[in-house]
Amino acid sequence: MLRFRPAIWTDALECCLAELYVAPERRGQGLGRALTEAAVEVARREGATHMDLGSEPEALVEAAGGDVALAGNREGRPDGPINYFYEREL
Image 1 (cartoon, rainbow, N blue to C red):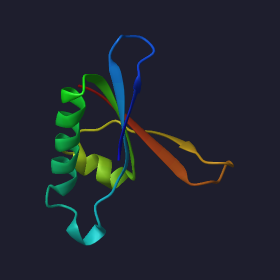
Image 2: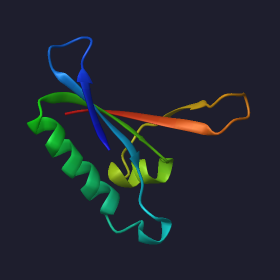
Image 3: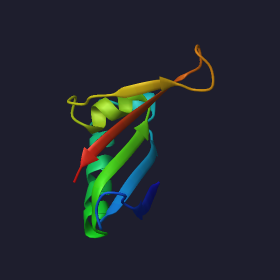
C-alpha cells in the first residue's frame, strides 16, 4: 500500500510503502526488490522525494538488495515486538 502526504521540510510529497511482504517460500527470488522498485517509480511519478518503508526485516533486506540500515523500536512495552523502519531518498 502506498500513501502520500505533504512533506514537512520541502514542497514535495513523501510516500509511505506500508506492509511490504513476500511469503517465506517465495523469498530470495527478487520479488521484494521488484515490488519496491515498482513502488519507487510510482512515487517518483507522483512527485515524492522520500519514501518510508515499513516491513519485516527480511523483506526490507531483500527489497534493498541486502544493503539496508534498519532502525527498530519496541511496540507497546519493553519486551514487545520490534518495529523496523527504513527511509529511502528518491
